[in-house]
Image 1 (cartoon, helix red, strand yellow):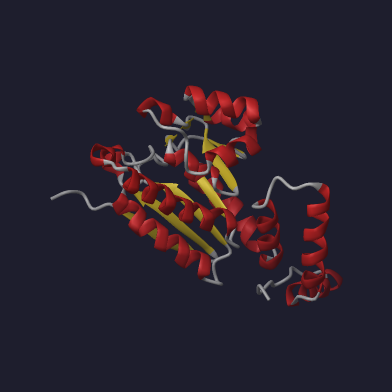
Image 2: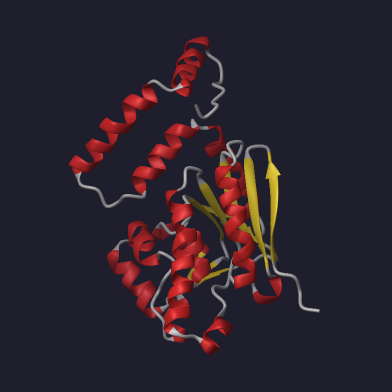
Length: 259
């Protein structure tokens, strides 16, 4: 019997952990995996008790990419549907309200690289490997990499990585800005959970507004001012802002409720 491909979902207080568990295929994002990962992410995003989501992979591998076996009987219609489904999933990551932390061990290749880059914060093990390996199978990058990668590393470095399938380890990824934090091998998830706790303790309405603004980049100055003018007055009247003011004067830690 074939190994069951799934996503393990666990909760640690306000943090939801989604672990891709398709070890026999190095956590490739197969249709079976995505059929579980997408609703799991949506459920976590819609749960008001979840203040941060952590995405990782089982077996010391984040994800080796997409399911190449699908290309054997590929048609333009099937290919378009795959890209559209992936776009909708990444929209949920990039435009959702809940901050997402990626804990990367081992390979983050192809679609796995795109998955990691759609997170708000990336923790990488020192020996992790990032690569946009699409052109090795005759494809252009997808998974939002044409948008996410240049914002982190600049256009020149993005061209090198996307056109030449350059492999970058965790140490170099941190230097370039692909990763936000380094961890020792096998410790990426622990470090990611620590960072997730910081996101989870922040005011959720404010975090959601900031994330929404970043999802609209690149912005010119007037667009940035417009977002501030629209969002800040509403936040000023929120219950969380009132709680923050109360806690400030009482010298207490605020208890944010997302209201």
